[in-house]
Length: 245
Image (cartoon, rainbow, N blue to C red; front, side, top):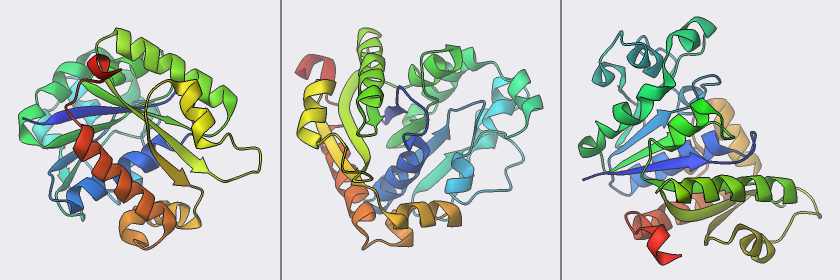
């Protein structure tokens, strides 16, 4: 039986999409079947990061009642990784019903080892629908106090809603000398620190090429950090964090 993990944050721009793509490919390289879901219904771009640009049927069509979900799943160029992409035009956004997202995603649970949902930031309807489609969650934050506190608040809401919070990822660390260090960030977040992903040009370059860093430049520090995160997720996935912490 597969694990459904929501990738969430309290602010936009933290790198959730890049993290979802790299973690998906990393887990796939470790022999796990993965479905990456673009749950950001208004700003869908996970398909670009995974190099899929020809999706005729999307998650939006499914949520509009115009397609079967299995017709919207695509094989990517990366081993064991599939993609459920979103549409990029506003017409599809208007038709899609985000309230149908949880039942749609959970219907696929037995088909993959991991389903990773790239969720929009915040606590509005579309974000909550995406986040609550998961059974577990990974919080993503940058090393800034406002980002940390907003993401912590999202984690509290999700924990109360019954999701298992696996921990948080400190993303884009090392951009400035004012970055909050990992130890201090863990005190603020009050959940385990799963990984520190450094600011690394290889990550951005891979994103622009549609090839996540773990494949684009596997020897880069960013790629190594994503692989360590995948190994930690393999260890923790399925453990109910609401019992542990």
